[in-house]
Length: 129
Image (cartoon, rainbow, N blue to C red; front, side):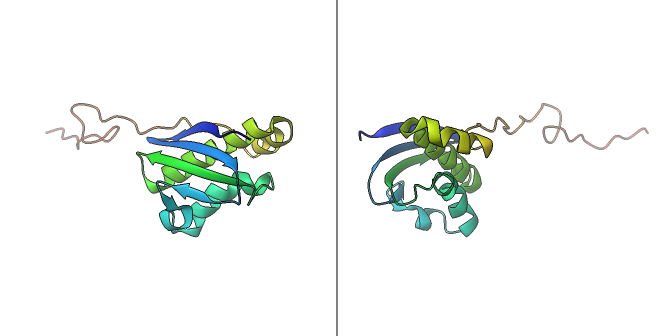
């Protein structure tokens, strides 16, 4: 199997995943994913597509992460891994991942700050007199 290249985005985080056959190593920015994401919740998010498709320990995954916060990065990695698993075996993996909403990119972004206001929607206190 050749190396499969996919991309995942969430908020301002971008994850590029390179998947190949192996023994189950997940390396993020030259560090183990358990070291990069010390919280178990974030490790669960990263492993979710692999657990659903029962392919834990089958593939070596190398991920380049850029931008965003820790939660957005974890969800970008999840999308990149899910897309790679669909490229590997579309007919069996796509239905499982799609039914769990792992193939959909979350379009929500931070709303920009408007001029004359302290934040995007917050307004300064109104004074009548």
